[in-house]
Amino acid sequence: MSTLAETYRGHAARATAEAEATTLENVRERNLRAARAWFEMADRQDRTERARLVREGKLTLHDSK
Image (cartoon, rainbow, N blue to C red; front, side):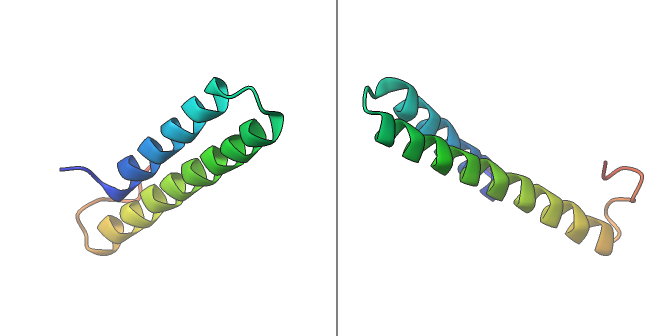
């Protein structure tokens, strides 16, 4: 089962690959910005998921790091 964070990371990888493949600077920069945004969303989703698991008692604060 794929998680939302994994989906976001897939989008980031795709944007990174498109940035590396282009010869146009503005397209490269746009794709790199998009990749950063996707990675940030994935990290935020991971933090949210860990917090939910802690709140539900399925994970301790010590385990969530």
